Image 1 (cartoon, rainbow, N blue to C red):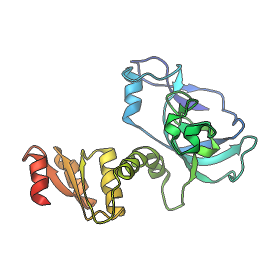
Image 2: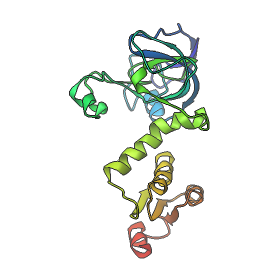
Image 3: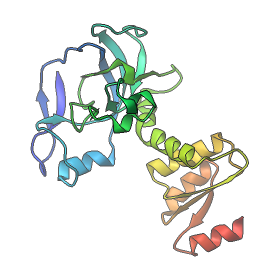
Length: 226
């Protein structure tokens, strides 16, 4: 199969022919339909964040269709539309048992510690897969599992409650997800703070009140607006 791989830090990614992965116990083989480009991937290529061992297939924002199942997998069928959480964890340790999989000592990130989704197929733990409804495009499903999930986690950690006001500093990918999720979670008002007119215009389209940080002190402006 074809895969786009990081072969050497600081060099362009290379398309290579690699063996089709076989799903191991508890894993599923996914035919990739969409793989998002995260800024982390640029860091891996530049060497500012370590990844490997090389060569490595990048890509941790993945959505696709179940192609085959490894031994012991239940609750999934070939042909199912899915998106993948980017951490492959053991599911057995104390951290996994209490929902803090990011601290799993045996955890490995797709596209950083093991081959990811810049390929025709990828093998991932079945427990990392979530069903993707037909009405959500694969491209959206892939991004949901990284930037949108990160923004949702931040809002939950911040205990955003319906009827509260929310200020989002930075209207990039994560920020735009936070704007939309904040509205969906019942925020009375969402304020998007940035210095880019186009980003603020898009945030306004999604229901945020734009705050231009170069035209006024954003903290003072937020105090005035609220």
